[in-house]
Image (cartoon, rainbow, N blue to C red; front, side, top):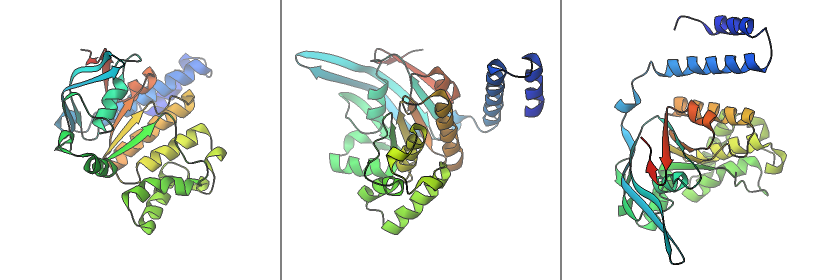
Length: 271
């Protein structure tokens, strides 16, 4: 790609008359194209180690006397350093798949292997410990404790993991800076915007230095500007920390920013 970003911006401003939302949208899309092209210069993700392996994964829920099949046999590999989007209509099985990959629920049949460990072999206590050490979770709702200042909210995961106070405070401060909240650590959640609260939730999820981050509709309560900022942050986390990130989303703009989109329908993978 021979064009430089400044040349592209000048070109697009000329095409669209120098200003306006259409020009801005085209510029943003072209810049994203440049970012994606830059990422493609590194080794293909398929050559990276597999960190999550799902085989013939099935999940059936019992509602009264009725059985509801949420997953009907999923086979999937997630590679180190990928940002993967799970998409599909409500009820397609996206969140169920994410919860099973994170060990928050157990499958009816099939297996989930994370960093070479088959989650089926672990009892609840060991599984909980493994989750705390290996996986970070981000949800649509921020789940920040309203009576704790941000600095303490960020430390909560370290408290449950038994991390020494001095270590978790140092990590919390570093993460607050990384997500752009260093000047908000003395604030309570009610004093933060929606975008700031979600960035705080991401920082909290990273406190135990997980190699995998699982996010369920992390931009569902945010406007488009804050949603784009959250995906920028995910890309920064992946690039700087080599974190593997899986995102459940309904937003096609978010899915387009991922390295790979996996579409689900009726508990199976399309295509």
